[in-house]
Image (cartoon, rainbow, N blue to C red):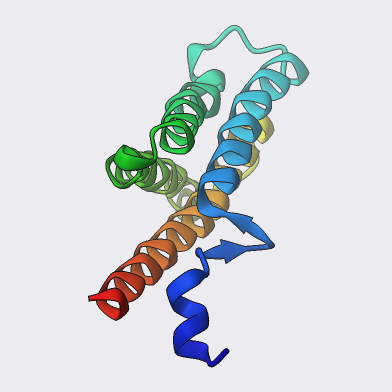
Length: 141
């Protein structure tokens, strides 16, 4: 089987998992992260749960994309939008670095750094998946 034939049949995978599974795990990770950070920091602030709140729709829409294959494209586009929001929210970490107040609020800054890095990585993986799907569609036409 040559590369063109292989691309037609293979689904995009990163670390041996489909993007839907990666999205499920990412949603769970974000939910757990927000809860753990809130407890570790003894925070009473709503904002410490932001990763959890953003992880819930990722988890839900990833799950829906697995259940409803015919709507996978729509659900995964929603998922990547949340990934992009996570990345953009995490960019506040750069403002903190520039302002010279890095790690004055240790737990909040760690969460922002995590959101920036994982949000970027996740969004890139989603985009790679979309590009792969487009290539497969073009090869099959």
